[in-house]
Image (cartoon, rainbow, N blue to C red; front, side, top):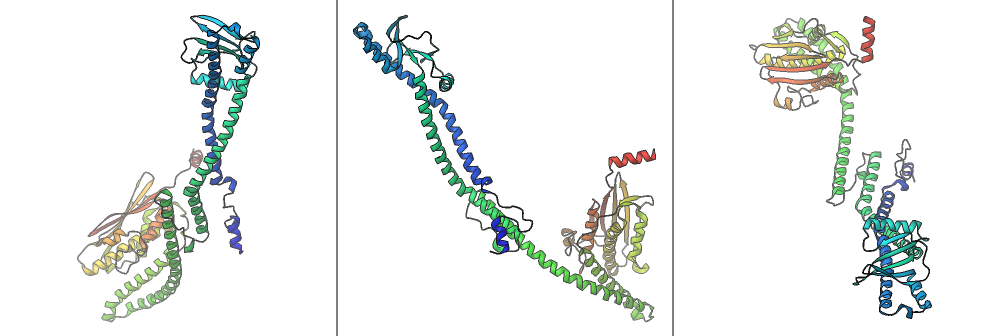
Length: 500
């Protein structure tokens, strides 16, 4: 067996060696079997109490009925006609010490062998409720054997009441034998019932759940192997639904991992190509700058378009490389004035004086924002560059239109809201539907949509949000919301003490 097979057989995850398989003693099967036996025994105990109480009453009623039959014979005949030995034999057969009859309020002792000095319990068989019967049965089982009972009541259709003085040792022995038989029978029934319930539930629930558990553990070890995807059974219950959903989720994950692996390979290749392409474009951009010094009219007419094309290609390469970074560093936030930062963004855009695009910095000179200056600069520059590119194309189509890019901001409490508005043609429907999605949310032909994706990632790192407020023909507004960092109560008290 290879190393991975050994790990799997041992129930480990193959890396950290942590136990993944559930031991038999703590498995669902063992718990189900123990709980089933326990619950059936509890049910049998609940049945046992009224059952043993009923057995006690029947035992006493049988003795009283026999005593009543003997008493009726004695009443018809002369009691003195029975010898002492015959009377003792009758009492011994019943297990009684004395037999009496009450008729018309008068009691008459018919048979007696050894009258006890006192009676411990008086039992009226015609006035016994279920609760007192169960309590008396438990009392007899626990403490009986040395007590005398006076049992009385009507027997059969006779209007006479019969009394019986009897020791409870025979009753207790009979009840113990009955309880032992009931306990043995209850145990047999419990085991048999538990076996049937366990077999049924094990086939219906435990085995499918165990199979899904094994599938999940196996799939977690190698999610790129399609053979480890669970195969659902043709069931219409909840287990079947769970199996189908698990299979669908594993299949989707397998497909997603395959796509991500292909995209990672493709991304690595694209990053390498873009790195070299950026260097080539930068060299071409430097050489094209020299064309402006040539006075030839044709060159002067073509040079600006060539420079804009090279600028776009270079921006495209830089955007792909920036988006390909594995993770942005956490923002190093501090309070900074926003207006100078917007001026830096304006300087980076390189808007030519004859482009017909006006840049307006409408941010208050005193407004401060709690942010990472470099990351906020990148987010604003991406938004502003998109706006300039959109208006540049619009300016070439119709030079009579007003092309203005305005950056404004306001503070409300601990939140700064920055607005980037332009008078360009607005975002097309496809761009609005795929806003902030890389490679799908571009507003122009040939764009990548990376600018908005990168801007959103940077703003979210600050705990803020970016949204499209308005986009109609001639007006597009994006809003960046940057909240201040939460202030620790301890730090606030320290600052108050230092300034106090």
